[in-house]
Image (cartoon, rainbow, N blue to C red; front, side):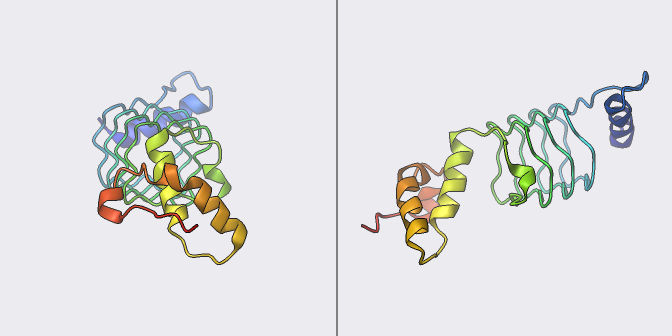
Length: 155
């Protein structure tokens, strides 16, 4: 598979050009790939190995990333709206805190992982503390809680 050809055909597909073809990168080995700024809207990346990939500024809106391995991937400033990340592995990946990560589809594993990280920040604000306490049970479902430590109630 020539990744540059796949990306070019995908761009043509996005532009409704006759020679265009939706990117099918299902189960592809993309470890360490430089996909910075790539337009992968609607691409099929199910089960793809994206460990350590550079996805900064990539457009992954509505991409299917179910079961993808995104460990150590750099997702800074990536556009993820509508992307499906259920069953994806995001360990050690950067999660974009821009508006581009709003509306992402995730499972309880990723929800617990994000809740755990939120619950482990130090903030003296009472509203934040109350939110952390409300998320504590979910946060303790984090798949690495044995390694990182259970969050105790502060009540």
